[in-house]
Length: 112
Image (cartoon, rainbow, N blue to C red; front, side, top):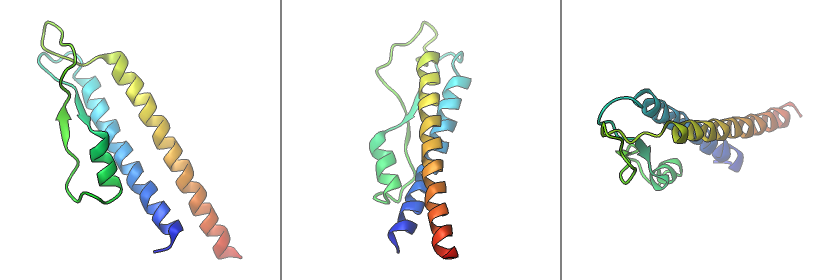
């Protein structure tokens, strides 16, 4: 496979991971007031292995341990989640722009 195709494939997988992270963060936000709910996360190592093809298994979504809980047993911090959502949205936009640039480069090469 050509390096350009490999880069587009990698960016496509990174977009998939960012979309999945968005769903997890949104789920955390939706459950900010649910008694006993614990924040969900995907570890960086899992994402890296999944994205580079090192792991054919599905990504593991886990409850994040070690965060302070409120009296109702919930450990979701809305400020943290909104920050994570913003960071993830920025990553998604970056991957999409890089992918668009690569596709534009391929389009120009075909036209010449």
